[in-house]
Length: 382
Image: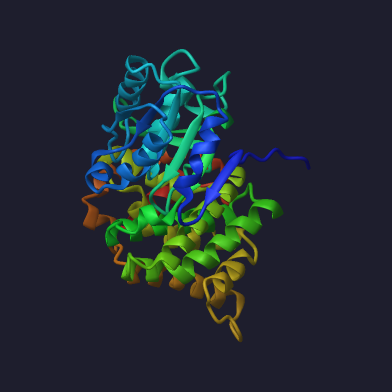
């Protein structure tokens, strides 16, 4: 059955990648960039590395640095106002998922009228976003590669999942040099986010042979390199591998879909303002166990990609070994053991479950969950 796949038109990967953005920008016939980022990255000097490249090429820019860890509709609206006030006509987003998602929202509002909430769901805009040069600084969300972005609607206390081919970046950039100073906790959280993308993307109902090759490769690379990147942030080879692995799975899950790990994690982020990657990491093994009887021998493939020796193991033993490998990796990189450590409250599970069932990622789950199922999964991960 025919299927349409979406990828960034231009991809720049590897150490020194930011030096190659200039000729691509010069081809765009644009005048002034709005640099969308956050204050932490400015203080760390990461943003300055990119600004030096722009200044060296005499590319004018203005800076919007008020991006929140879980960006809101108001956050995007403020960025859009900065775009107008500074007469910018393209976006340079610098950061992880939060600046990338904010940049996408601003770029969409730049060419599509109305409120961002009007575009919640799948493919609701009429026009291609303003050009986006998406410079990733974390090895996790792959937002620089995908047609998805997630923005919190603060009025409803939920994360809106917006799936829109019109939001895809014009140029996707992964330069591991920008990731060398990333803290251990953030390295761990974003790395487990990427692993969740790959495992969910490989087992989702929308997986195809084409998306499979991206996701299984990502599992292999992330499992082999995340511990190294967390242990030694200056290990450029490990950083380069993680940048590649998270990008590869971005191309996979963006075109195949995800499942209820993300549906459930989105609600935790919207409700409690929690880090998305940590929520994913805690939930992943429990959801994998829940879906195990609906994914055939796919957990065997995941186990092998994670380096598990499956010789002489029965199918059920392989599934258990796969889940144990996910748990061990999560533990080894310092992810909290359960949701209780994050301040999540059992009394909220019913509300969270209702929201998760309505999330755009839920239809991709290999099993059709009930509210009771979701509540039980939250309890298991508690």
